[in-house]
Image 1 (tube, rainbow, N blue to C red):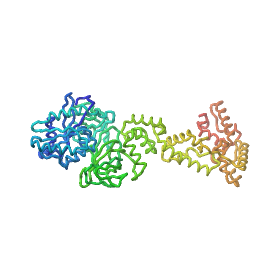
Image 2 (cartoon, rainbow, N blue to C red):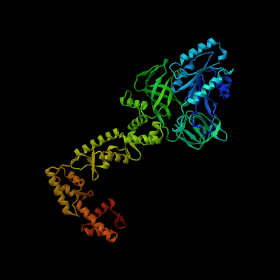
Image 3 (cartoon, rainbow, N blue to C red):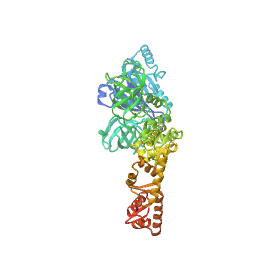
Image 4 (cartoon, rainbow, N blue to C red):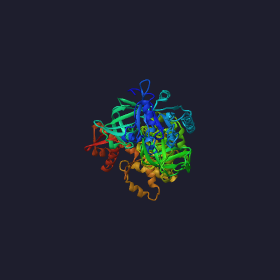
Length: 637
């Protein structure tokens, strides 16, 4: 395909039993022999994936993947099948439907391939009656699958019979085929890795979505290694840009062959999660004899990757032939998946394809079986809109105070689109911003508000004479491990909602009010008079506590007076009447304003107090950023 061709890039793939003529068919269609290994030529069977291209009438090229048909190489078949758009199910006329015909058909169905053609090969080797029986059998086998009603073509790669008809059918399908998703971040499952002298490490794979430019930065998942596309080729032609649906060879800069494996995925940095689990819709193929039970061990195939996993059935005790359920797959190695991806699972022993499904959450929390909320959320992730799916994700991850960049790979959308959806959810009141582009779900905020009210209510019971809890203390008790800015944002939301109030740095329940008994009212007035008359030489706190030691709540009364703004705490032993502190502030401002600065001795003399109290006042003003010490003097800060 020429540089700049961006639409309808289609990958055609073969499927079918070993020795049914898939490779010969591709050679007849394209003139290209896809068996490149010496062993393949010697044994006459395809072992590894083979690649060719079909020249289209308008000058473009469609990629063709030739997959192995032998049961021993199903793993290799699956590595290529994931990128197929149009399937050619190949059945030899002399043998008819065979075990891998059935297995490959099941795999293609599980991978969500929507269109294809049935190709009956070797028709020159059988008589017409036998051929008709084979065609009828094949039609019966594909009933209920995506190939029901698909074209069925008789061909002979040896004589050329039917090759032109098949080629035209493929041209028509390509013309009518849906365009690839070019707006998504690029993604290439790696199916080959090799070294080229003078170039270094090269990989090949199908660009399943997005576009990749020469020179673009790449991250290798799940290893999280960073590299760069030093060079690109599409169908053996150099290009500056590759598009979704094309077979691509990428020369990777600064990466050794041993640092990337088949099964790795190339994508932009931060565009894919790396996880040991996935929530899925699991479906077993009809007609199978195997039953998948909870905790079963399975082989998991996704893109070009194979890993072992344990399956946790979330809404069933077991799954039999043709049945489906929600499940959580727990992998033995890290994987990088995307919501909506298709996969195949094979039985652990004996090794045979039993089913597959679709990824609903590529990086979930662990679920308990039959958890109603988890199952309801999975239903939304399976069938809901992007907005509904994102709301569920925000609710699940609210405790992490996450951004659009976090949610984008879980949602399977670009960060820009994810941010648009977050803004829409915020506008509808479903989520709340907590600063820094971070969000929480309103249900989470409501639960934290209830916790805050419980903490404050208990505090008011223990400290009825104190105006409230200091914000710092509430913050640390509410969410001790969260970022301060996010917790402050939540507290501000609760204040705006009039659930709590904040007065002079003390947070309380909205309806709370300090109520003093007649005796304590009298004591408060007495203490107010004591401190006011003492002015700039107040009694030590310990002296006051000793004088009123028979009053059980004396310390709470003093604390309440500070909270109400009647007293100011200069340090642990010096409380001063608030009006006197403000008077001292005015004296300080006037003296510095007149002389540009003021010494401790000058301040002491102006107040007519001792050095101890003058120091306590000035250090308090320093802490408030009202004054600043310069040498032995103070200036206004």
